[in-house]
Length: 161
Image 1: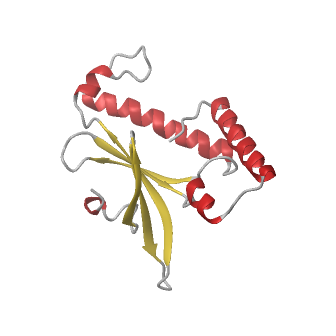
Image 2: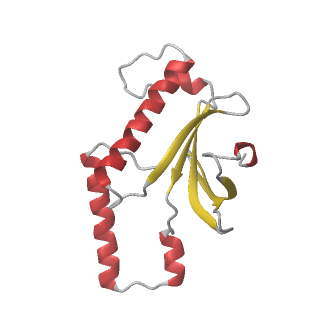
């Protein structure tokens, strides 16, 4: 899937898949800088409408009747992009991974749409735990930070991707 996407966001290229989940896949991406070094980031791909039955059954607002496929995509994408803008404007990189860019594409197989999210590159907690052992105090600080992030997310109606 990743090679068919290249390039993404202009001059960025997928390098390898980092993981996948129920709502998409995550890739390491890079671009070559003028001095030959690589700048790295992360690409999250959310696929919408792969299963055409979803369009008939999903009603994101629970009270809006979705008339057609394009209206379905527009409704879902508006909710996601509004959420991204809210997180970017409200959080200022203190609690959440920073969204750097996003793009909408038709899926290459013609089934649905892809939302491409460019995110700042960060290390996962599982990677950190392989290298560092945390003291009880550091573990408590991390737990409190995660809880504050979840509270912050709830205060402005954010989703966790």
